Image (cartoon, rainbow, N blue to C red; front, side, top):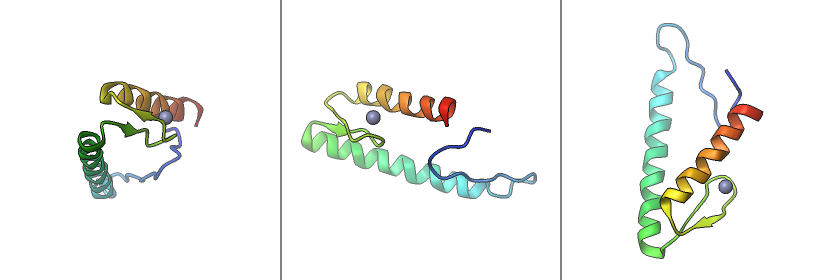
Length: 75
Ligand SMILES: [Zn+2]
């Protein structure tokens, strides 16, 4: 499994660690919602990785996905 630059949660056989993964995903989902509120208020949102700002959330999502793909292939 490629190493992410963010947190890595070990998942052991038997399901140990899965709750950490779920909690982290919930946290990230909340942060994304916060970002949407920010977007509605300010009309732009910034990339979590490089802080570049985007006025189109779809473009931002695609841009952020590129970071994630790079992390997985180069990291
Ligand atoms: Zn970026």
